[in-house]
Image (spheres, rainbow, N blue to C red):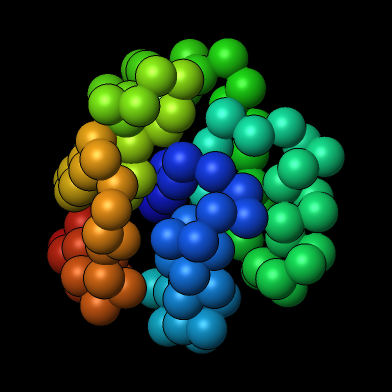
Length: 120
């Protein structure tokens, strides 16, 4: 599962990632690999993950190529759209939730259900 978010240490993103952390047992129970991506640097991700004790891997899409390839671009120039992509074992995107303004975060229950549904 790819979880794109606009930025480290921003209010909504921090709440979103801490919510994933708080529901980590539920995510882990699906067996899915959960990865967060933003255009922040590796150093920024490391600090963010340590500060909030985040259990998921954070990847730096500093040039925006991954988010662009997935169509996860924000209406705010240079930012990633708050997005969730659930990809099955065959590499097929089974669930897509892209929020170009990103004012509201996806609900963990909806994401966990999408992961389970993709597992068929």
